[in-house]
Image 1 (tube, rainbow, N blue to C red):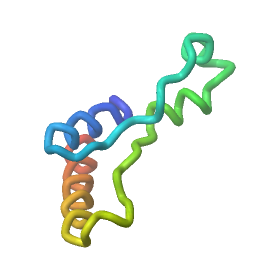
Image 2 (image 1 turned 120 degrees about the vertical axis):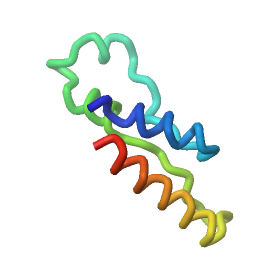
Image 3 (image 1 turned 90 degrees about the horizontal axis):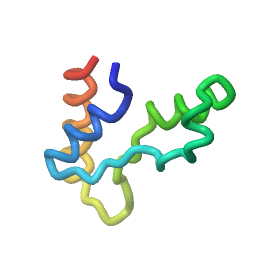
Length: 74
């Protein structure tokens, strides 16, 4: 698996402003053994825009696209 990056790119290409967890400092990224949990979190976590100003239709659209992306990449 390519982690969440592939799914993020797929959703972004469809106009959904999904992001990954912010970048880690180089000293963390370079030391996988000591910072395994932080690195795994960075590789797996996606931030999906779900908030009170979205309509139900918009949330359903994002959910459908997310489900499709998850099934496509697994």
